[in-house]
Image (cartoon, rainbow, N blue to C red):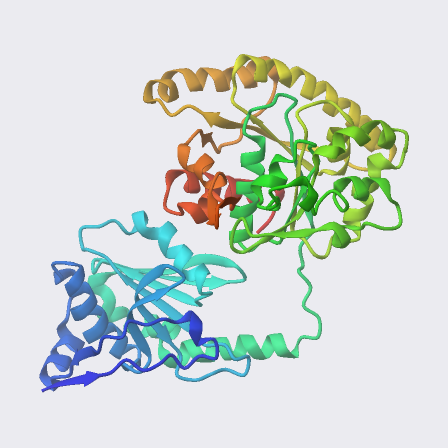
Length: 483
């Protein structure tokens, strides 16, 4: 006979996050079939994705790991992500957290590597503890811990029976609950839980405009945030493009301007007030969100005033120190000039990224950048701060034409290294319509189009452009020593 199990409501205090498919789940429980599959089933014999799901995962793997239909839900949709299987622990832990395992099935002919970016986002989106992805031929198990996702086991499908005890020790029902219970107890017993990270301050600067600086800053901030970093963006450009891109300018009329009385100028102007925490605003440009110190067009009128105050040059440096335990990464967006605000950013920064489209004017500007950095490093030596470390020139707003990428771009990159003496970063940011469309995104509210910019990682997370910024974030973390 076939036993039919209605889908129960998720046993979670935050059940709104778990919107399970309402159809009933039918599981074949013929005793003979179960015994045969238990001892002789080879998942590499699955002919399509449906058989990987039903024959391998439902009939064999989940029962072998100790899970019953009461513990798992099929075809679950959460936050616009659709999972093949969501497995939750049958016990609510003292932290009110449930151990969660995502299981994804793919067609036997599909390469699992092509699905890893999306699969990783699944784990991050609901803070799952473990994930298993398989096409029947290969089984991979991932762990999401301390905001990082890592591969912990890979086996061939035909070896599943021989390795089932090893799999069970990682994601079996009892093991997965016990591991999270131990973790929860350790966290509860610890009186202090410091970040244990040193804040990294990175300036993004080129004295040539139009090279993709703002786009780099906001999307890099989004990518770092999605990798578990606590990010602060400081806009030091009077054009306030980063402030706009981060979604902080919602007003339609200057009479509704809610920035002019509390922005970066006040941080620079005042010594004993307008600290980071007083001026910072939360950006909804991405999820998880990051913080922003906004700029304003009026900043251009205050440069002469601020230049007469010697302490202005080191004020951000000093105020950042008071917030060093709150952030992992600070990104400083700078004006395309050699002015005071650019100096303030370079003085405060530990590292420098130089976005460039590698065109002649941008390349000629690198001479000015080099001299500018040398002068500021001399001042930093006077105040006892280490010289800024240049992470490299970041090729950005690069054309995508195949012949250009194959033949012309390598020569442009070679010129930067040989003629101007700058190393290039490994990442490349190409000029793609999706990126600008994400920042230009808006909402219709009545008769008004209200700006609602999105990061490319939220607007089109599966796009090539999103992958480019994910790669950039990974490279930056490696270069500055974030593990």
